[in-house]
Image (cartoon, rainbow, N blue to C red; front, side, top):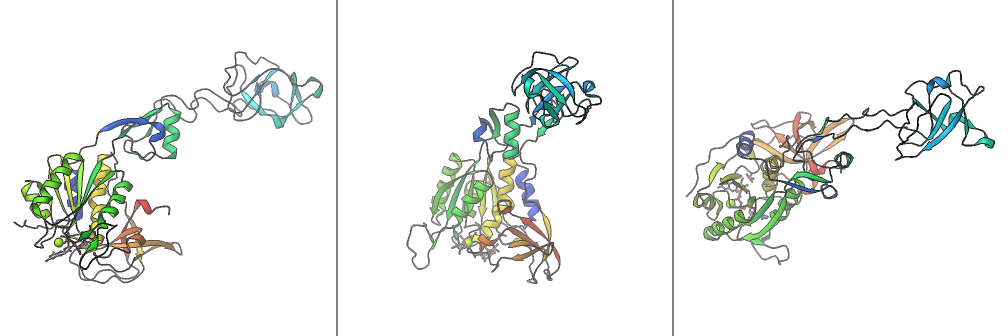
Length: 417
Ligand SMILES: Nc1nc2c(c(=O)[nH]1)N[C@H]1C(S)=C(S)[C@@H](COP(=O)(O)OP(=O)(O)OC[C@H]3O[C@@H](n4cnc5c(N)ncnc54)[C@H](O)[C@@H]3O)O[C@H]1N2
Ligand code: MOO
Ligand SMILES: [Mg+2]
């Protein structure tokens, strides 16, 4: 049986997926292992930063009033009553005429209201550590890092869904998150359909090809924060496909298949959706490549039926699976980001649907310029490596001309390369 195909827009397809996604399970993991994971709770400052007033310099904690009139030529002598190291809790008070040695990061003692750097003092060699000469007039509060000046207790610092990187690690450690609440990594089954498929280790034989989609998709899953689980290659046989899909759904959070979603005699995914009584969210999208990309729900789980053509499979993942993985992990921006770029060459091929062209953007004379990476056929596999974005060419007979502004969707994992 063939499904009726009613083409919908990319945005509508994305919306149909997101409408059914509830955020994933939460687990607490050790801070050191949380790199790259997404936060399941907003992080709130559990203390002031700093939580005590402290010195930013090595020097002397003094009373500013005692320094009135001090200069290089007229140092004012103060009695040194002690030394405060980082980590000390000073138990004395700096009284009139007194000073305390203090190190960078150490707590300001009572009585003192400023810190003078060692460089602005002179110490009498004969009476070292007992008398210090102050060579500069100080203002109240000068050279003090005040309690809470950076952050106050209760400030919301990181939002749910944020990916943990260096800055987040620093905050989590600062506020005592030895264990971090994160979303569990979604387990994503990957199944390649096609009787023509060989494994990477197999010799090529006439008419057959090696399965590249599973490995490409596994990499995309990892990049989007999921755990890929490979279920190998499946020949085009409906009975086998139904059984395999059921097995995978029982072992994973959701399933990505490639191939078999079009109208060919051996395109098994259509049968799978029918026989599993799946809730088909869509099976035709107004886009090129990958117009036959299909997605169905079985209970709370999804089957993303990506196209077999590698270029279409790649694009289908970026437009539909990535947002699902992001939404599961609380990320607020689920779709690829958008930018405007100047088209570097004519793209006048007419298309009834929006084209998502694997492309590369660069900065030329201060402008973002985008060009396709090469042969733009959905069966092409060897130029995906050159793409750092998808370029959107609107539907219609005219296409787009060199110099036109077009929307591009930068691929996040290519940023910073
Ligand atoms: N009569 C029509 N024919 C086709 C249509 C159509 O609308 N009417 N759509 C075309 C478009 S567009 C696409 S895209 C493909 C989609 O095909 P399927 O998703 O059913 O994929 P297959 O038929 O299984 O394979 C297509 C192509 O991709 C190669 N392939 C498959 N799996 C892999 C893999 N794991 N690694 C690498 N390459 C793979 C396969 O050998 C085929 O060459 O349908 C068009 N036809
Ligand atoms: O939908 Mo197909 O991907 O254009 O080759
Ligand atoms: Mg096919």
